[in-house]
Image 1 (cartoon, helix red, strand yellow):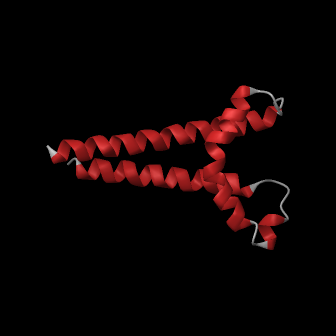
Image 2 (spheres, rainbow, N blue to C red):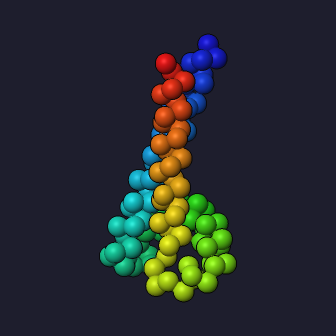
Length: 98
């Protein structure tokens, strides 16, 4: 019984991580089109992903190299961290189900 609950919890975490990847990809696409400020989708994507991106931006801004770049590297780092976490959780979940 505990094994089933553990597997379901793992699948939930992986699903949430994939959903966050999808939202961040949507935010990246929306940034290319410069949506209006009253665009509800753009505001939702920003509100959903900014709590994950902001702490990374805060850390990277401490370094002169990253703070002087013309693009926001914190988004790229956040996406890489998210992909690594998703891969780790998926691998861990698959290994635990064997």
